[in-house]
Image 1 (cartoon, rainbow, N blue to C red):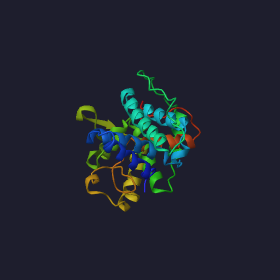
Image 2 (cartoon, helix red, strand yellow):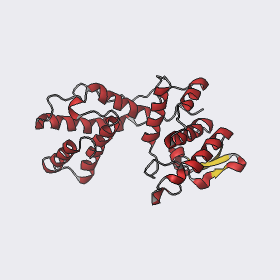
Image 3 (cartoon, helix red, strand yellow):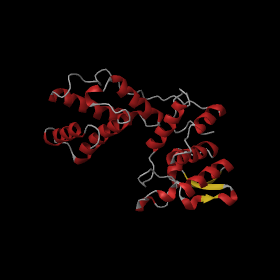
Image 4 (cartoon, rainbow, N blue to C red):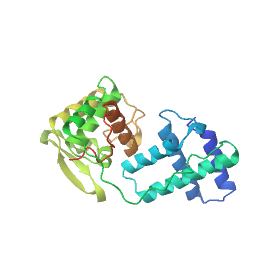
Length: 248
């Protein structure tokens, strides 16, 4: 059972029966709520314990991920409708979104990290665990090769040219380019490929991808962002960590 399953199901029924939303709108609303539930599942936080600060932190991290303000506003709209329904339904006494304002359209440039800060984050990857080995390899490519997160999660095994010291990445518009990678990046990549990845039950549609989650599926941008954020917190770094933070 996932977080808030009963409440989300009730909200879905309400949207379908009472509001008569289209299938597309209905699914979009539920995706927005499930994103918040997944985000807060780390704690985890019960539905009646959600506060305004949790909603603001979620929106802040969407912002750090580079999600456009218009998309943030749409997501907030779905979350607001969910909590308004729970108040109306009697599940909650108050709506934690009532004072939350829509995101501003302007965006500040993300913070950058110093060499020492990046080193501290790299050192927080626990090489005694499979996920730690994978995370260290991913961070080496994010920083050492300056990859975008989307390029990292899309990296395929056939894109690695270690003998030449390059990897092939696919960027915006599906354009390909060769990117140089350092010895440390290949060192940890090989450690991951040789000692971790063979034990993962790889899903059929993820066979070609280099980096996988423990269930054998490809990683998402959100997952990589949360990994970076968690390691930064462990290193005592308070800057806003975004998918762009590690780029030169």
